[in-house]
Length: 241
Ligand SMILES: [Mg+2]
Image 1 (spheres, rainbow, N blue to C red):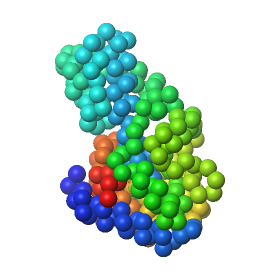
Image 2 (cartoon, rainbow, N blue to C red):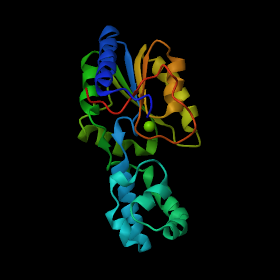
Image 3 (cartoon, rainbow, N blue to C red):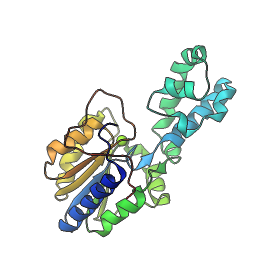
Image 4 (cartoon, helix red, strand yellow):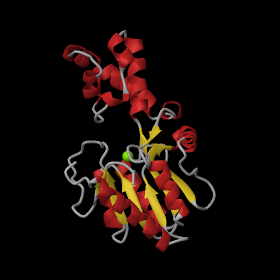
């Protein structure tokens, strides 16, 4: 949170990305993570809590809302939605199993909504002449729901030679390993002009892989690993200019 740009600085960071997109057209590539970067997953999270509450006989969870998710901490969300400490202790493990079976699915990811300003900004990047690469740790089995949400929210749809969707192959590949593998694939598309990711480890990896690119951290939420964003990587709250 400390390094987050003020609104006027956020606008100038985003304008700079557009200028770089134009300068490197038509081969330049802009890289965007999806979850907690372009898309807000909290409506998905809230639906899972409501359904768990119905299954487990916890009426308080019928009122679970996106704002009860302030981080990726399920216990914190259960508390915020109104469970007592004893209920949280009793339900944390079964709720986590219930969550795991649903969160990474096409059906539930349809609940996601765009981060403010994201659709207009990504469209502007494309209009300024850059290729768009969505690089996500979502597994390939989530492709149908992902495409549906991108289209519904007004984000450029993958397909053709200009908009690419790189999803994690199903299997045991870790997110960090996948992002560095994906970075190599993206670099083969053209010179990377800008990259956006909410996960400090991933945006730092991009900044090191592409020192000439404008790499930007989305200060939304992240996995809470103790990794600091590199000092020269700016943070923005969303994509409003
Ligand atoms: Mg993310």
